[in-house]
Image (cartoon, rainbow, N blue to C red; front, side, top):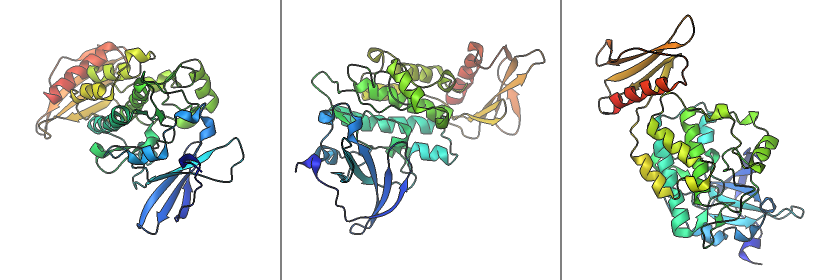
Length: 354
């Protein structure tokens, strides 16, 4: 029996199962090491050609602070053909994933979002450049929180695939909201495919949780079969306070043409490292505030005051002590997606980070 065919015989106690999309997840207790573990079951028959899947011994070799350490991978007996079910055993992180945090009602600031993505990019760079592996299933449920945004861990390597000499791995039949357009019908996936998915995660971190329940499997599969992202237009809209340079990074990462995306995790990480953006929050309807980057006692505020005939007046103010004062001329816009609105926030952001 070879490494991939070994049967699952673990001296662990299964405590309970957790829902996780189409895949079953179990929480285990290891009585020898006295710690919690997570086992994620994956049906390899979902993959078109499983010959490129990463061997368990290679998964277990990956040792990086931003990649979840795989403890073991084993075949699970008792499933009828053509199913080939394996269970990937990993450490248990009490805070769970980015998606778990959203489900708890948590939100992420812009600085937290960028630190999370940079950490994930470090993990992808390790997989791509050192081990020649594509993740092929990057998504918010697979980014695990440790209490420090710099040590967010990229997990669930069950569909990871080996790159060939051209930097490609076969497509996989694993439709999900974060998937690149080429996942199912392309002639292969590349580093840029993983980076597309991480761009979607960045979009979600900034705008807030996607309404997963409103997306059917049929919609997701149909979009990918047409070579399109499953995300609807309304879910692609960024908050008004996102600065121009960050918008460009997301647009590049999520370009439908793989050749026009970032080609390496390092290149994307370098661009993100240059971003300066304040931690904006909507404190009331139509009111956004952010602390100054260097002087936390100072704040900037943009207020959208509705006009009787439609549209808004945008008022930018700064507060150093108790009083707010205007710092620029008011601007009238027809709607909050107008280019002038983005320009107002661009100036306000520059003020906060200067």
